[in-house]
Length: 158
Image 1 (cartoon, rainbow, N blue to C red):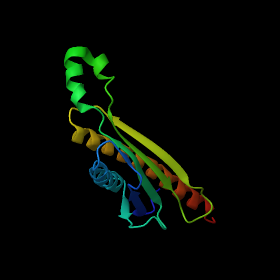
Image 2 (cartoon, one colour):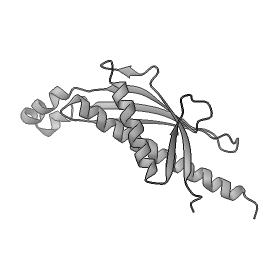
Image 3 (tube, rainbow, N blue to C red):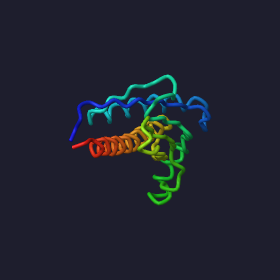
Image 4 (spheres, helix red, strand yellow):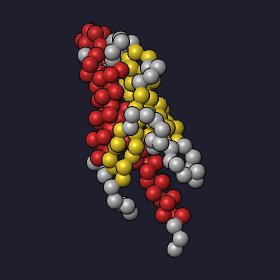
C-alpha cells in the first residue's frame, strides 16, 4: 500500500574520504547522488538534498574512493587469461550511511556498501562503482521506508 509520494531528506559528505588520487571523490559523489535520485524516483521517492545533516533521514559518507589498477587489466586478460585478470585490484567505492527518523519508535539503521568494478579506465571504474553503491543504498532506503510505513499503519487505531 502506498501513501502517495514520499520525500527523503538526505545529506552526502566526503569529509575524511580516503582517495588514491586527490580529486576522485568529487566525481564519485556527484555520480552517486545522481544515481540515487534516479533509482529512488523510479519508486516514487523524492530525494531532497540538505546542506547540513541536521534533521535528515539519510546521511551518507563516502569513506573510500580507489581507482584500482586499470592499466593492469588488459595485459593480464590478454596474456594471463581470466584467472589472472581477476586478481588485479579493482576500483572500489565504500559508502557508510545512517537512516534515522524523528520518531523514537524505530531505531537508526546503519549500513555500509562496498562496490567494486574491474574496468580498463580509472574514470569508468569509479563511475561504475558509484552506480553500484547508489543502487545498494537505494535498495536499503526503500526497505527502510517500507518498514517505516508498515509500522505507522500498525500504530494507527482501527
